[in-house]
Amino acid sequence: LIEAVGAREILDSRGNPTVEVEVLLDDGIVQRAAVPSGASTGAFEAYELRDGDKGRYGGKGVLKAVNAVIDELGPAIEGVEASEQRVVDEILIATDGTENKSRTGANAILGVSLAVAKAAADSADLPLFRYLGGPNAHVLPVPLFNVINGGEHADNGIDMQEFFLAPIGASSFAEALRWGAETYHVLKGELKAAGFATGLGDEGGFAPDLPSNREGLDFLVKAIEKAGFTPGSDIALGLDVAATEFFSDGVYRLENKDWSAAEITEYYEGLVADYPIVTIEDALAEDDWDAWKALTDALGTKTQLVGDDLFVTNPARLADGIKRGVANSLLVKVNQIGTLSETLDAVELAHRSGYTTMFSHRSGETEDTTIADLAVATNSGQIKSGAPARSERVAKYNQLLRIEEELGDAAEYIGRAAFPRYTG
Ligand code: PGA
Ligand code: ZN
Image 1: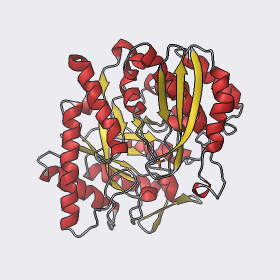
Image 2 (image 1 turned 180 degrees about the vertical axis):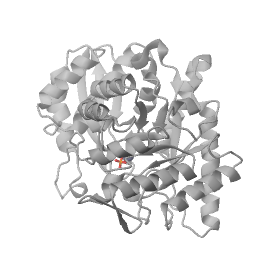
Image 3 (image 1 turned 135 degrees about the horizontal axis):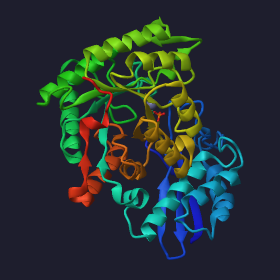
Image 4 (image 1 turned 90 degrees about the vertical axis):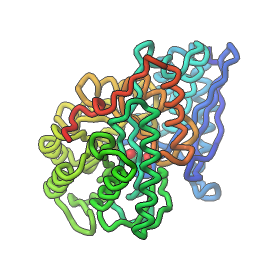
């Protein structure tokens, strides 16, 4: 039984405050969870409650959310069985009482929801991935390493937010991680040799001032080859365009030009023809549904089209998208929706509807590794947690190494099969 719930304000990887929650069970088990935070957030995400007191952390303090845990959310679930996750989450949602978790804060609710799951797993003496996924949890996800950072995550001139390396040809997660790290280091050398800065963006990727998005893809291909791998079959490429960030009044502003949705879709078709691209995320803006449909018709059989700001891990928005035939993959961010149960609902709906899923960190992260376990628990097959560098990013990858070891012969790294639409 849940005996007590505590919370505190800690710092995330960007130096901004975030919520950490601790749950104590009556058998003496204590577990904690920390909440991540985005920069290029979708308009339809659950509400992240910040204090707005300019005298502390520039208004970004989270003491209101911390107090909501201590005064309201915690007491509401005391005495409940920790393994009754759906009951716990329903109580949290009802206690908040708003549609988008804005009263107590989705950051407060998520911290409690995840800490309860971890405590229940510990109490059952099971690793989190096995507690949540049962005996069939065995698929190690393909890591998508964000090695070039642009958009809202860096101060360079690149419009697209994330450029991924996807080691789909590796035979284990450990090998995929090694390939990614080796290529990352070669990429640094290539950028340096070409006279570009090799400072890092928020997700640990390099943030060079490249003249075009194609140049970024060219650098990745060069680095893959120079590291001794074959682009496409060993290591494929991916993009998170985060197009909502450069969309306004029906126009996409990319590379200092105005593009219509039709023009930018044609541009993507060219990229997919020229590069081994397994996935494109948020290729269009979060509310541009008709254009998304046309994009899916044009490219959905050639590559994975992921909805992040589009779906915001929200089962209702995803159901709408599925009905319209929009995109073919769901990005999964626990703090976009705010409880574990709703996150798992979204993942289940996606899988049942033939959509793939990619588990995801946020650009503001902590040392919490829950998403690594969630990816394996759901046999998702894909995870993005930034570059293979910087501890808040690597923490998730390192946890996957431990899980792969724990699973032993049962572990399966499905590689390319995680991307059923990829035709490259
Ligand atoms: P965010 O970026 O965490 O800043 O929202 C990640 C993403 O867009 O996928
Ligand atoms: Zn995204």
